[in-house]
Length: 183
Image (cartoon, rainbow, N blue to C red):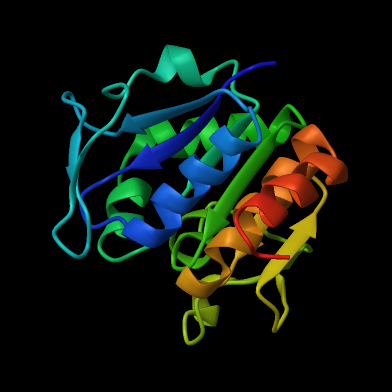
């Protein structure tokens, strides 16, 4: 199985980023945390500093199963400012591969890139203006083709379990959820 990448930039939402990493690893998916910087460190929106597995390496992302963007501000804006990451997200979608974004990231990254045009998607409430062309739903998680979006911190587990279910099957996602006492 190809690795999935959770991207980190200063200002990332800790719950969204770390819940995704934890849930996907519980599902036995190979997950790599990657900062968008030359060093692996990133500081979360609430002051939690993490040391990612890797500093930014675009070549590693070229064979990703998933590229996942947590939200948080200014984390989502910092991810959006990384031109190489944005190019890789577009390439990933063009190849029919999978991407996921939660909270501010669907409206700050995916919407402006045109990746949500004509798709069902969700974002953090009040950020719908960045979702031009998307069919914005009022629910925690949306799946449309090869794109998964989540609306915020409270949806982090469901968002991660949805990703795990797509890659590993619904039985694995159910088992992970049960082990976390979510079901």
